[in-house]
Image (cartoon, rainbow, N blue to C red; front, side, top):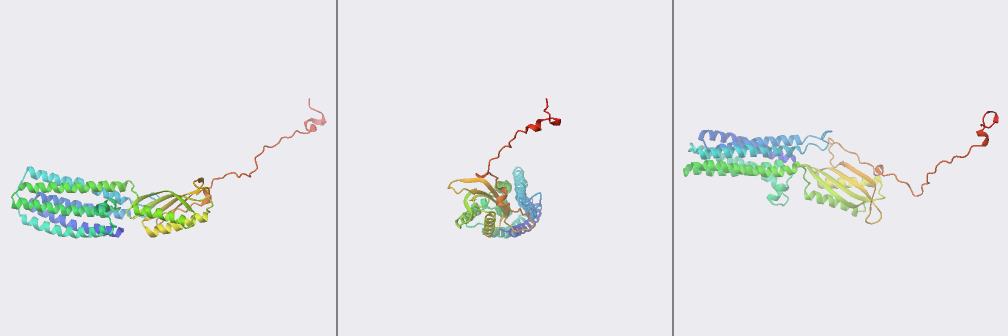
Length: 375
């Protein structure tokens, strides 16, 4: 999904949650409902989280520089992890605390109609935000189930907003049930129990976010689709009478939602020239970029394949390194010529090195002055 799409989802959620938080705090202060106070805190935490995600998106969009040559895309993962911590510590912790306090000190809810009105408005606004997040999420599912798509998503801004919105809808439903039970059935403890249940919902979402974002933060491989297509394109280069003869390994890493680095090791013909290697690099870069624009960097370690089957020479090694993206703001590393790293070796016809011969001096050279011999 594009960064613009994620930004739109985050901003819509931020606006909706801010309005909901203001209304909930006012209702909680007016009615004294513990469940409503928990929901108000929940909405305030969600608003803060969307602000952090928006900050992370903007920070991640900064161009690469000398200190961070691969850019700042992973900064979004850091701020998403902070969101998970805030959601757990503030959202879940405070909600559970308020619920426990209400269980030990139960009191009836006053002006319950205000709570019903605010919860109804909140359900409408949260539904708008959730609908936008679901629409964006379904575009990126690619036929996978919802759980599988969440586990494999590389865009924490999108799935964080989606899970928070779903948790908000669940929390609103629980709060409505708890307030109704306290009002109609006169079960004062139901309001506190609803607050505790809201806290447990938030804790579960925070735990899931922490696990998924941690995997991205420490360096997760690109999607299976990217890995498979890169391998197929490298294989196709050899099938088209190109210099590639074998693929040793392919390694990928997700730098950000739209930033992937690919490093591959291949065997090429021993007779391949610098022009052959550069042409193969250009074809592979163009083909991979066409299928996966998110591949920003492509590095290929080239080893010379021996003419004998099953043997790989190590005398000639070249590295094709370059950016697959045409973004001028990101540093570009020029390809290393294939012949530049060729190890020197002696030919079988090279003449052996001989020591210089020392000949005896003539007899006259050993005489002293006047032609007489030295005694």
